[in-house]
Length: 69
Image 1 (cartoon, rainbow, N blue to C red):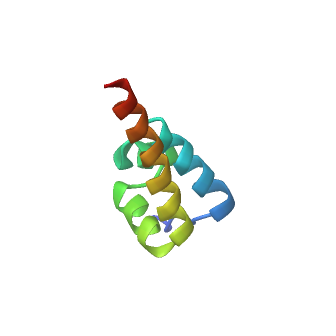
Image 2 (image 1 turned 135 degrees about the horizontal axis):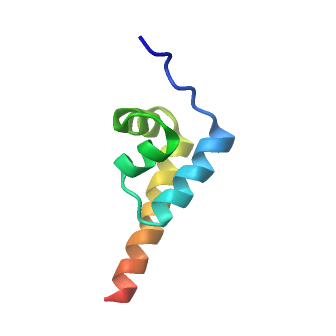
């Protein structure tokens, strides 16, 4: 059984925000970070700052799409 990936607030939050702001899905974020999609979802639930980073980044991406319409 593989070791559980370790979450690092200083590293993963900024990276998640950046990827989400560029329009990456949870699956694409997971792939970039070398973890499973379930891990991204779990980190978002267990670590408030990570969940907030994902939500805010996706908000930026959504705003870009809306402006382009």
